[in-house]
Length: 330
View: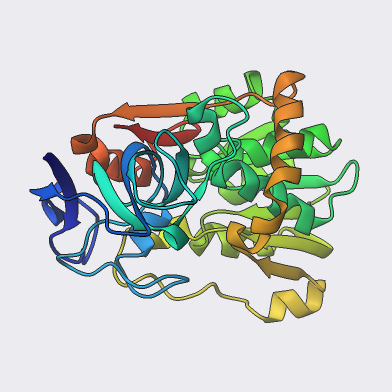
């Protein structure tokens, strides 16, 4: 019989996340019942949203103390009592932070792997498609000035590269000189602001003399507030995440000036989650893979090995350690 290790949430964080908020438990895992499958986890996606799920209900139920940590993952079927899945099938879904899972047919779907498994979890996965569809919503125009926060992260770096492919001028916001250098020298960003230098307003005025046409927001909070005043009239704001507010309790109030600035500048704000576009996965992945093969889009993967390191991988991501997509390989 297989031994299944699971990482559960020990207590709800009231401030910054730490390893003490998690607990690892082990138990036997049984064979699947009729209509179910046994899945071995291969890769777990590490996302800032994992932290948000601990704070309350979002687009999914809150993760409560004692619950298995949820997480999108890629796995392989090792035993089946389903007519729709066979042993060896690669599947995806919310498999959670564990070695094995028993799943019903409607809880997973076959993964359409067109390249490596890790690439399916990065640029050809949720994060790559988030960048792709977010920029479609932005209705990019050639020579737009596009500003991207958390620009060295999983979504931000891809969004910036796509905007460059589309002929835009791309400015990133990040938190270290090392990341700023990577974004400009390796990924082709036109400029990068290190917000930790404390000169965000001044630096943005210098790098965006004609203001900002499209802002791809991954962080919310004070940076979002600052950018609103630097938008052009009729600018488009794509709200993808609120990273600055996930790892604190309670989040700061704000942003100030809303909705007044939206009215006076006639801004368009659009929030979205990538699952809104599940019916268009093939379209996105075909285009993303073409850009990768043409060397127009660089793939940045930050792979951590071992289920036991999953909590530290998330904590590190929230602290800005990663460049590109962070994934745990089991």
